[in-house]
Image (cartoon, rainbow, N blue to C red):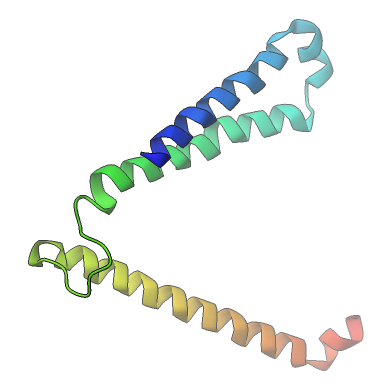
Length: 114
């Protein structure tokens, strides 16, 4: 429910920031500025992804799966395995990141650039 309320809030902010360039005098002044770019990306990107999170949370993500228990019903075994494998992939990615940072920072050419 929190995501749904947040989506409505984002829709309201999107509408309020859209009123400003609706004025023709300000539209000419704001043309090709970061305000228009920010409004466009906020209106389309942020709200679209937030709405996707709402949909996944409501229809797919936690559709009745109980939380905070060590064992889940057999009906949710596939979703549990999918989330566990995603967690393992994230840990491997984080470890890879730290290895790359360590190797890069230990090279002499990197230290000379600083």
